[in-house]
Length: 205
Image (cartoon, rainbow, N blue to C red; front, side, top):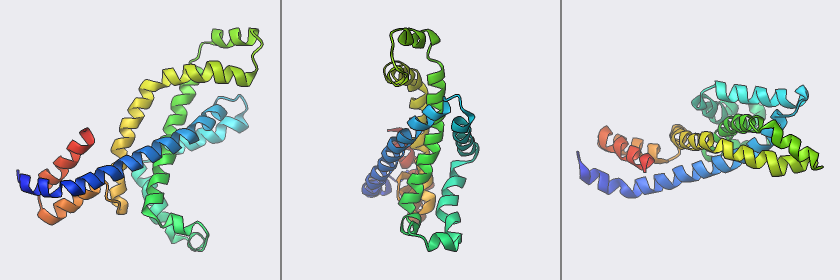
C-alpha cells in the first residue's frame, strides 16, 4: 500500500465526494418531486391515467441506468434537430445529462415504492375518513399520504443507498465524482487498489 499517494490525493477525493453528494441530493430531491404526482396517477382507476405511468416505470426500471446515461449524453447528440434546438446547451452538459438520467431512474423506482405503499393503506381507514365527510383530497392528504410515507420508508431507504452507488456512473460522462477521481489517480500512478479502495471507503462513509 502506497499511503503517500492516498494522502496526496485526498484533496481530489474531497472534491469528488462533494460532486457525488451533489448528484445524490439533486437526484433524490427531483426524483421524489417527480414520483409523488406519478404515484397519485398510478393509483387512479382510469387506465388513461395509470397506463402511461406504468409504461414509464416499466421502461426505466427494465433498462440499465448506464444505458440511460449513454442515451442521454451520447445518443441524443447524433440528431441534428436536437443539436439545433434550444435545449442543446443543456443536453451537451455532462452534469445535466447525468442528473437527468438519475432523476428519471430514481423517480421511476420511487413511483412504484409510493404506489405500493398507497395501496397498502387499510381500506378501513379510508372508509372511516369518508364516514366523517372528508373529501377525496383531504383523505389523501391526511390519511393516505402520511400512512404511505411511513410504509415506504424502509424501501425508500434502500433506494437512497442504491442511488448513492449509482452516482458512480457519472464518471463515464467525464464528471469527477469519487469514482472519476479514482480513475484519474489510477491512470496517473497505476495503483488500482489504492485508487479504488479509497473511493470505496468514501462511499462507505
